[in-house]
Image 1 (tube, rainbow, N blue to C red):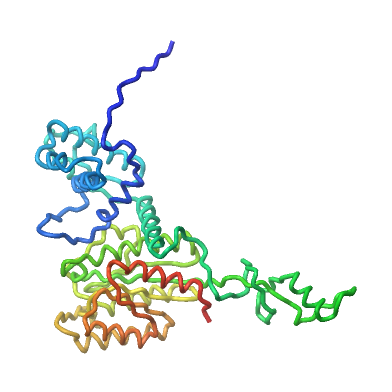
Image 2: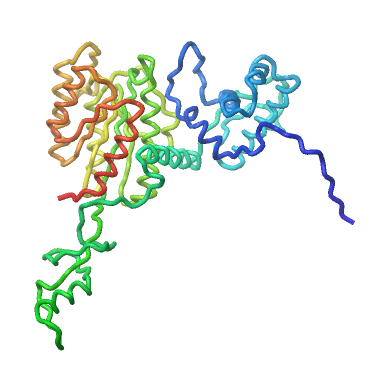
Length: 413
C-alpha cells in the first residue's frame, strides 16, 4: 500500500516570492550603466556573485531578511544562518536559469553545478550571466506599465483621438463621402439622407451627396531610431542619466512590438563614433569615456531610416552634452571637448539639414540646461522643424512616451 510521508514545514525568506516580482525589483541592477556612488568595485557587474549580492540587498529592502543577516553573510557565509541563506540564493539562481530568465556563461565550479570538479573554496561568482529574450521582454512590459501608470493610464491599447480618416476600424462618427475615401458605407445614415431629400417611396434613388462613410482612427506606419548618448558625461556630476534612457528604450520597444507591429524601432549609440546595437543587447551597454559625436550618430540614424519604407521617419535623440567630435572624410576622429567648436557645430548642423531634406523628424530630449546647450538644441530644432524637450531623468520616459503616442493619433499629410 503506497504511503505518503509528511515533513515539518520550515519557513524560508523566499516563501511566496515570485520570479516576476524579483525580476521587477532587480531591474535597476540589470540595467546599470556603470554609475556608482563612492568607491564601489564595478570591474565585473555581470557575475553571479554580483547578482547574488543584489538579490540579498533586495530581500533586505523587501523586509524578507534582516540587515544583520546580510552583514553576517558578507563577513562569513560558511556557517550558521548565513550558510543556509547562501544555499537558498543558489537554489533561486538555479531556478531563474532553469525557467529561462537568464543563462550562465563559462560557469566555474560552485554550488550551482553539482557535477563540477574543483576545490570547495573556488569562488562561485566567477561565472557570468546574461539576460534572455524572455527577461528583456518582461522588463520592457513592466517598465511600460510603470510609465503608463505615471501618465494616468492603467493599461495600454488603442488610443483615442480627435483626428479621423476613413479606414477599416469604424467609429460612430460619420462624414460625407469624398473622392479617395475608403468606401466604408454607413448604410443607415446614407438611407436617411436619401429619404430626407426625396421622401419615402419605392424605388429609393441614391445620389452622390447621400453617401455617408464611417470614420476610423488613422494610424500611420512609423520608423523610429532611438539615438542614445553614451559619452562619459551621462554618468558624471552625481547622477545616472543613461539608465533611465535604457529603461525608456525597453518600454518603447515593448509598446511598438505589442501595439504597433507595423512600426519599427532601432537603437543607435553615439560617442566617439556611432554604432547600431540590437535591443536585446541593451541591458549590457554601459557608458564609456567617450566624446560626443552627434553628427555621426545622426548620419547613421538617417541611413537606417532611409532603408525603411514607412509613412513617417523620426529620430528620438537623448543627450546631455554638446557635440565634441566629428568623423573626418579620412575616417579619423576630430575631438574638442572645450566649448562649442565651430567646425564641429557646422558639420552637425549640415547633417541635421540633410535629415530635414530626407523628411526625417528629429526630436531632441536634453538632460541638461546649460545656456549654450539650450542654444544648440534650439538651432537643431529650428533647422529640422522638430521638437525639443528639456527634461530630467525623472520625467524623461513620460515625455518620450507621450510624444510617441501623440504621433500615432495624428493625421500625417
